[in-house]
Image 1 (cartoon, rainbow, N blue to C red):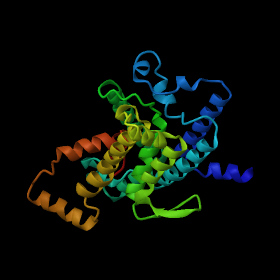
Image 2: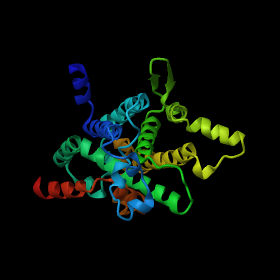
Image 3: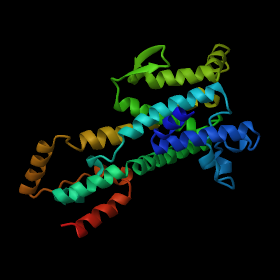
Length: 295
């Protein structure tokens, strides 16, 4: 039991509290303390008088079962790795950060290192908002009728982001075989499609000619998680961290000096809008305080 406690305490805080909340929710449902139908995300009810559905749907996966424990195991493994490697990249910092001297940058870096968990939590909140918006759009405009377990979608998106960021790693799947992380999201989708029966149901409906695109749980899950996962990975890891930001310090500084020499303004509206979207808002305050209080 002590080993289990040590393992749980070793999980980064955001992932740990989310996993505990999922397990606690499943326990409450199994003990008949709460009805699972009151936890699903339903856009009409959530936007009217049942606002708790915006939150509860991210904690409900299933009742206590072997399937749930396997789900939590994979969730903890992928989200833990993402949280441990997560940090606010220099590419996300506003242009005012370029004017900081070496001592000021050291202080800012200490804030970034200290705020890793809260920055990661802010990133997850942004993803949650995008899930709610897309789920609501699918409900009202596209007529999707599949159940909307938003926590499952969040799990899929975080797994997709981590796998896209580390596409060449080898992952052991429950001790049976290893695959590259580039293929893990698809394996994950098929595995849970088998466990919850949605894959076989979709195949059966297709063979009988009764397949309904807008009522398929599996199609809903794929169409929600993969585009959103790619959007958040692409904007943060590719556009801002690679395309709009040269990772080589020498080349980047040479470019900045050339722009100053020719008195050219380094204006990029798309880049600045993405920074405003992705940068945790407290860094604007932190940078301003560092500039005013530290010489």
